[in-house]
Length: 398
Image (tube, one colour):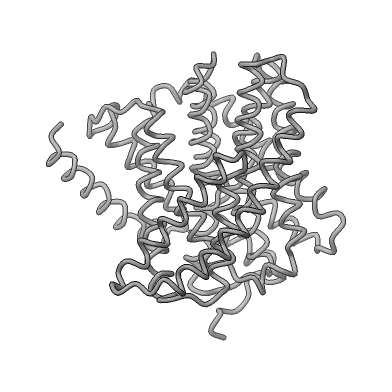
């Protein structure tokens, strides 16, 4: 395919996705569903006939997009709102992910022919809530806030729980390829990954503030470029020293966004738009990677796992993690319901394929179906459920 054809197809897909997103907002359906469907329609088994079957490229695009999405989410997160709910958010993003992964894994092992470690791998892949989906849904509420600090709790959780799911996923794949690895070494690796990710996130965040404010660039348009470079430097350096790059990016952006820096308003708007672009590109790419004919055979088992995740595993994780905190039951019910799965699990589901594991394709298809089910059922009912529970507050301007 010629470059001009790629540009034409890409621009048309972007344009269609943006126009469709207006309709999805009015219908109360998450935009990601439409982005994925557009990608599937454009794919080899759709009307577009574009053949794409490269999980390596998909994984690369997904990680690039996640850096932008988490960075933008961190910039928009207000520390004053996060501080009162910091520990409950951390509990959900660490212990909550682990409880969800183990619960789903045990259930899958019980009802399917997957081995115990394969079942845990699937549970780990779908264990985190999706930052892109959560940020997008809350930003589309027209400035209307949720009561009782629920919104910052969910945003903090979704922005910081990908590292734990990433660690569990990559570790289980490593254990499947290297079964002699000890449990002690795995635990130490977890502590190192999260610890270095948090520490370097703080270091790079404070460094960003100083550099951006003191570099004195003569071309204002270079400031967003500088910030992009710093965001990816944060991710890469953290990754290469053994820390979790996704966590460090979010923390660095959180520090930067809650301080003063040059052209802050313009840069915030720039990264918000860039995050939406990355979200659309990511979901379109994931849609292209899927072969709908391979999804059909796993619909039955996919539905059973989805309902267990939504109705049992996620609520169990939320109620156990929030047990030490004074959180009303209806708040916990709502937090349980906003356990939306999105692009992150699908990206993580490419890891077993890239690693060459057996059953990798089936794992990918099951995860994709679970994601679609979660986004449709939970994502489309969030606003109505908030109204039903009496948790919808006034707009931020009120």
